[in-house]
Length: 323
Image 1 (spheres, rainbow, N blue to C red):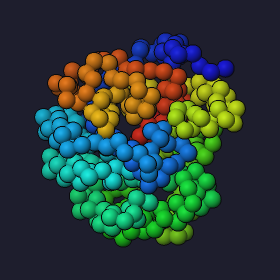
Image 2 (cartoon, rainbow, N blue to C red):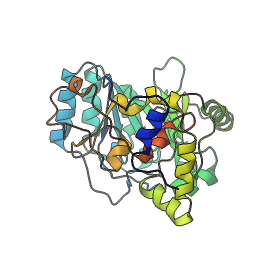
Image 3 (tube, rainbow, N blue to C red):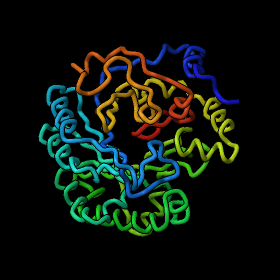
Image 4 (cartoon, rainbow, N blue to C red):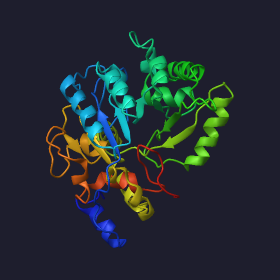
């Protein structure tokens, strides 16, 4: 059976945990738009080549202004779509780096080979941007099945370019993490085990990376529809519920991340953004006075939250605890 609407809150209470509330906000995660050169089966924001939603110049300026007045915001995390396709992407990167902030680019790799993006990899390296790159498997068949024809081949070409620029090279200061997500309705294997597999297989073809992050597929958007078509939706949600791990709760990203949509609306996390479950209180980044006022606010929860707390847990930074 599918979980009830308030079942996540009940799971917290059953395990002696308080209702989920926000702690200090240290990461500003901005979805700069839904345009992407790919249309992956698991994409929870349903990005693709035909999407036109995009962050504009006024919001880009507001993001930098909020960073400038909020020293606790140590990280600007840029996501999409393919964030590099937004015309204000580079201004955001330069502005945040000038403020001394850590900048993450959630890159799908193939975008680096798109027309007009020929110098993007070099730009990211010059600015010292940390790259979190999607590569859901180390075999061509599995990657292409989830992401599209020739995506594996193009992803490897992009990784070679990043490595040549110094990414994942000792002492370069250029960090490259890869992201694994399951190909179906099951939980990721242990992160360290998968990382060893990736290092062995990709190392054999000369590819270097710093870390592997495992992310659980969330039962929302495209993946939820795939589950419904195959008759697996309820079974998958039950899998997540039955593997609830209370040890993951303190590190949930919704406690320390403020998610900003391309139109400036605010959310506790990127998944809540996809489901239109807004942050309680301030409606947009233009209305937000001080990020410190968010401390203690209740986090909006729903059954999809079991995806972040199942097994070893899942976040934009990978696993949260031991399974």
